[in-house]
Length: 404
Image 1 (cartoon, one colour):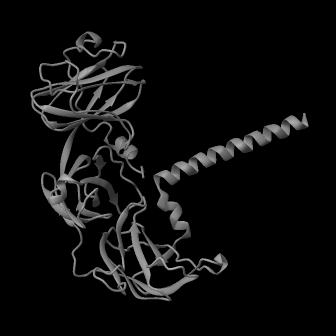
Image 2: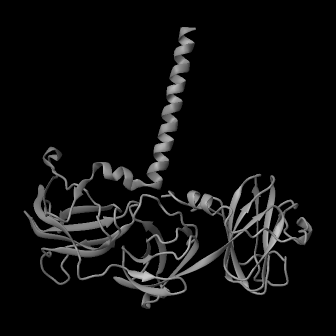
Image 3: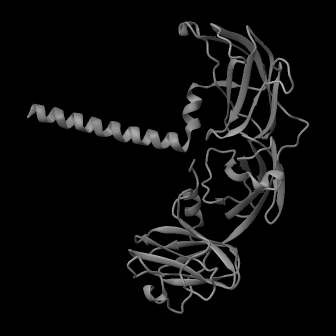
């Protein structure tokens, strides 16, 4: 009996350890910077930081690595990161990167000389940062040449100062666009203050000469508090009057700096439950609640070219469709999607694109999965969905927050 009791206790301990490890893993995936900060040294704008390093390739016990650092601005604005007085026992390549809490780069720069000659003695970059948002600084040093040396050692000075010559990022408004200069392997942002609480869609594209080879992405939408913003295919819910930084990055570009056009549109919010339909004439997010367990079919009948996105949790799209092969209307540009839902499931059904006389149907699918036609759908009664837009806004806002 005693042995069985001990085995039960060990089993509980192992189960708790497994659960704790799983939770820790999920937290690291959602917010890697939270753990990075534990080992980082704090930086400030008040004083310079003198840094020395030693990399002994024959005796690792003599190695003195460069620490990684965390800078948390007390106010929003542009900040200049500068490394000066670079000294080393042999020519060294020193590189500096600044990353956000998701480890996405703000910039990467080094002291590599642009023309023939030795390395530069200074590295300097300016980036916009948001109040209270951690910025991590990673610095590396390595021999510039492939000489077989026993040790690389040296020192430099790191300073951070607020750039008073710049007013901060450009301001973005609904229905308008801004053009950002984005460095390769970096990010740039615009500030946005929503005029009302609701869903917003941010569109971005490269407009410089590298538009045919590279592409831009919406990398993050951040605020000065600790709440993350969940983004699903460039759509997110934001709070009225709160300042957000909207970040874009460029990929696969052959230019050092790309120009990216960033625009924002507001999506109307509607409510729907069970089997019903809605008539819309603008981009809309339907907050849908399933009233039973069934296979849900969502499709449009319109004169335009709509797209559809369905998700339950921000950042995890369940279905996307911008050109369905199903013949559910006379318009080949209409869209359709099917998914299984349980009673009480809350979905966001986002309908966007060219919206013209668009009717969105939400009904049951009775087919076997091999076909999608009107014969596979439960007839929808001639009754529109409820359109009270205030019902679930607060609850949805809570669910959409804290997803980093």
